[in-house]
Image 1: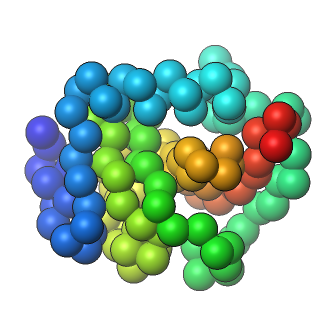
Image 2: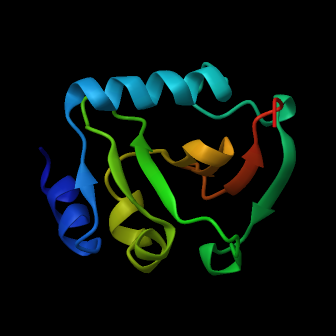
Amino acid sequence: MSVLFNECIEALDETTVVLSLKSSKKIIERFKDNFPVTNWGRVDWQLMTKVSEFNDIEDFNYPLTKCYIIWSDADLPVVKSNIKSIIASIDDVTAVSFDTWIYFLDKKCVLEFFHDGKITFGYATSV
């Protein structure tokens, strides 16, 4: 793993779990089933519902807890954590790769940190 990945894991709280590559692949497949990603690596927000953009992660105030961190670097495992810990360590989380998605599997919603600085949140159309 990269130094930035290891620093991210250290910054997150003790409930954080690094998934196996097999489990990571399953989570990524479910993510891609719910959220089509464009050729340039961004969630296709035109196909989503209830989309919101944020200027700062501190503005994100949803009662969601358990989530998965997925990075655009396909060689990295998925990390299971909670949104409070992720927000507290957001600089370490987003430093790992160009684009970062926080996937709330149970609610079928995603928080995207795109490399251009945009922070976008939305629900899959099936919700």
